[in-house]
Image (cartoon, rainbow, N blue to C red; front, side, top):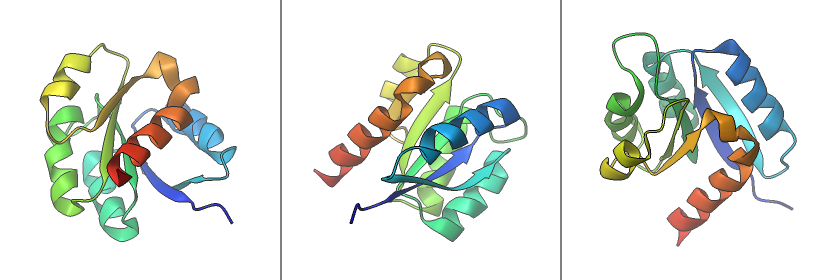
Length: 125
């Protein structure tokens, strides 16, 4: 039996949410357990589902957005791996922020499953 890693998605673009759902839906070891359009909704999902990984959009609508919201997710569930996903090149920002464990550009979503597995394997040590 394959161990399944749980993923929560926080993304305000419904098209990107649908793409991620399709991408993760084809992976037997990755399960999208919830998705939200705002950081505030996402924090509730993280508390409820205790996911292994959070895929966090950088340009969210609302008071909490992107990299600035990552600390709130780590407070809600300290064990969650945070993968920042953005259309912008924010690799330096992600690398400089302790609450962000990885970074993926939206034009690289085809690599999502591999990046998720790499980050989760690194966490497990």
